[in-house]
Image (cartoon, rainbow, N blue to C red; front, side, top):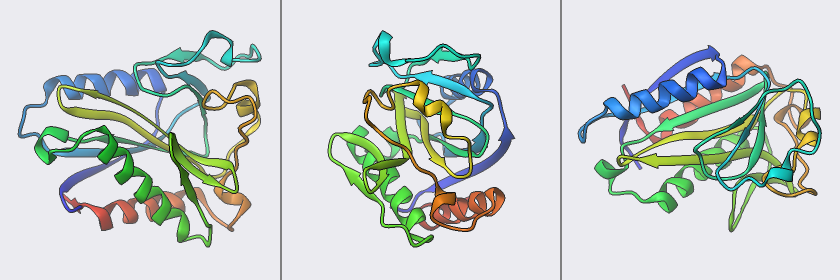
Length: 204
C-alpha cells in the first residue's frame, strides 16, 4: 500500500469535539479528497460502539460515557494512550472495510514489533493482542465512502478504568500497555508511530 496521506498532530483533545470535527470533515470531502491521519490523546472518556449492550459499563464513575457511531463495543480513552483517526478515501482506493481493517492491523503489528513485542491479531476480534491481553483497539465508521474513527494504542496510562467496562464486550478481556514491555516516553512513541505510518503511506 502506497498512497498519499496528511498526518496531523493534535495534542490533547476532548472526544466529543474531535468526533464532531471528524463528521464535519467527512461531510465536506469530495470524491477526489486526500487521506488524513490525526494523532492525539483524549481526556478520560468511555466510548460505546454501535453494538455495545447496556450492561457493558459495569461501574458508575465520574468518567463521561459517550455513545458513538463507530463499530465495536465499549472502550476507554485517557491520557497516555495514543489515538490515531484514519480519514481514508476508500472509494478512491477501491477498498472495503475488511481491507482497511487488515491494513490498520498490519500497521499496528509492525509498530509494536519495533519494541521487541510479539503482537498478534485474532480473527473476528479487531485490534492487536500480546499473550491474550489487548494492547491496541480498533473501531471504524464508514460514510460517503470515507472512514473515520480509527485505532488506539495503550502506551503509558492508568489502565484502571478498563476494569469498569466489559472491554470490547468481554468480561474477561485483559489489557496491557507498551510501557510494560519497553522503556519509553510518550512523545518518542508518537513519533515512532508516525514513522510507521509514513513507511506504509506516502506523506504530504
